[in-house]
Amino acid sequence: DVKVTQSSRYLVKRTGEKVFLECVQDMDHENMFWYRQDPGLGLRLIYFSYDVKMKEKGDIPEGYSVSREKKERFSLILESASTNQTSMYLCASRSKNEQYFGPGTRLTVT
Amino acid sequence: QQQVKQSPQSLIVQKGGISIINCAYENTAFDYFPWYQQFPGKGPALLIAIRPDVSEKKEGRFTISFNKSAKQFSLHIMDSQPGDSATYFCAASKRTDYKLSFGAGTTVTVRA
Image (cartoon, rainbow over all chains, first blue to last red; front, side, top):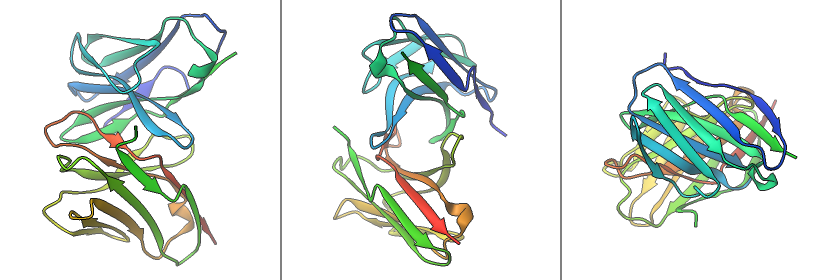
């Protein structure tokens, strides 16, 4: 079974803090993704990576950056967290058109 | 803007009834249309997918209907069960693309 794990289920941070969200997959997939999920808006793509050290902006990259130093790990970075970044963050890896999602990190920025 | 429009936002159905969720897309280059199912506290998981060379695909109680000329596709859940209560997302992409465009999601509640 494919397993995608995310470092935290719940996270509370203060405005202006630097936030790291970590994602690890165990299936040697080349492609990995970060989404945010908000009610009524579905899943919106923040960034994706098609290979190690390769990344591309998704639909809503502003305020975020990513890092992929190893194939199995894809990190999302909020350089200076703001209240409008309070959301559920989902990581996924991809194989043959199917995306496999982690359980999500619910981030609250106060 | 959202490339895939999904409706309704939520629906309630009695056990044994039929749940129907509709999606519409604009990009005629899309050629892969999956549906994802998400239970509370979990990430979405692939439920069923269709390519535009067929008009219908059935897996158990779940059926995708696809209308290429109308650029619409829908998910039918037959004989709905309480265990089907979840949020359902339609999505679309080009097979050659890495990215999926997701609909806004439909929360389905099946009452026993």
